[in-house]
Length: 87
Image (tube, rainbow, N blue to C red; front, side, top):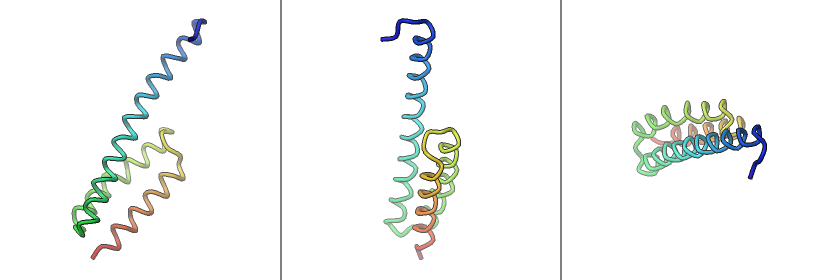
């Protein structure tokens, strides 16, 4: 455990950031799961709506440093291809 004042503050900050990151990642996984469920059911309008929610969330998570920029880009690309493949 930290003993210096600055190290104690750093520990508090890290705990807050970790909790925030876990929350954001969980929300991302939920949005992606909704999209995957709609795509598996061949429901293009629902999948497109889910993509409209998931893509900005992924981009925002990348800009905040929760996930890597290229990871977000790759996921957005794959999800978009999946939705566009639906008839």
